Length: 462
Image 1 (tube, rainbow, N blue to C red):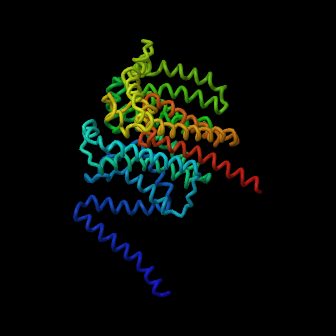
Image 2: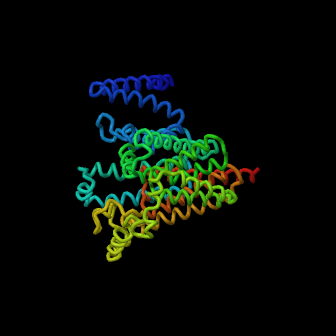
Image 3: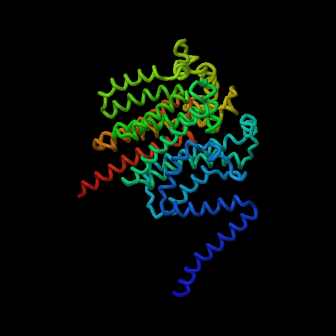
């Protein structure tokens, strides 16, 4: 017994000596690496004590993953990026925590099915890696391609599994919803500040979109995805509690959408507002909202109005769709329907680049992109699962008592529906950084439903 106790007492000392030697060795290679190691150990210990803080950091960092600070490689080491470390930290601290992991069958089936479909799609595209390298102007080998397009997307999906598996209690649900709200506020404040300081209010929208893309490291349509998903929840918070912060957050969100110049976002903001007010039984607010919308149109900069009316004044579907109907969608569908194999299982990841008659990076349509990559099998998988989840959330809205959770549940439902509608002009079913809010919104909604079911069951047992 004394021997065992002695060994346990020596274990922390051995670990400390080993880490000290490791930091010293890294210091000989590059002092920045040793600094990262020390900071990482301190942060890891803090996050181990409070795992939910790691998730909060990831939610807030997600929109900034393409910026130089968050997305660039540290010390030139491949994969050593803050956002990657945050993803890894979230997974590790929850696995090592003492929290019990519990997930229902449909959620597990969805996650595993998504990963399997993604893996098969990526592996089937590997024979065409030379074409993808040429198109993306990359020099990826097999390892880098798998890490970038298979391993990393899987990590983007894991927060969904962590939230539904670990963050099930009422205090956890409140924490995640609060993180979502503050994440949108931080993003909006940064977008507005960058616009006012760097771009200027009189800038042409082409220039503004270019500058936003350069700074955030992603297309402005990708930035708009955060708002397509986040706006309904920000609106739900404001409807539930009309305090100063929620009002400012709502105004900042709408202003940010306006200057990102995404026509899809413009349409879906209007749709989400009406749909939410109807779903939450606040129809009496519609006249006031319509009046505010008309006032906003008159106050909006000319560049915003010009962008929003593109293709509408000409009554030209080709112009309104930016040429996608005749130049992209129809040729792709004509090509696929000639090949039964493509029709059934697709041609692998990024099929539009390596296995289609078009030289395009994506089909500007989430459903068509999924169909090209995975065929009817993959598209049916995603559509059926999202229909199932939406039905669960809709039933939850009927059962959850009136108040905060029902209002926020309505917001998450609108959020998911808005994203599915936005898929007609772009986006992706496979996990990526720009749709990271989708998995968080979906996880929040399912947890609210499960929490209410559990509490109702306990009350009946008592």
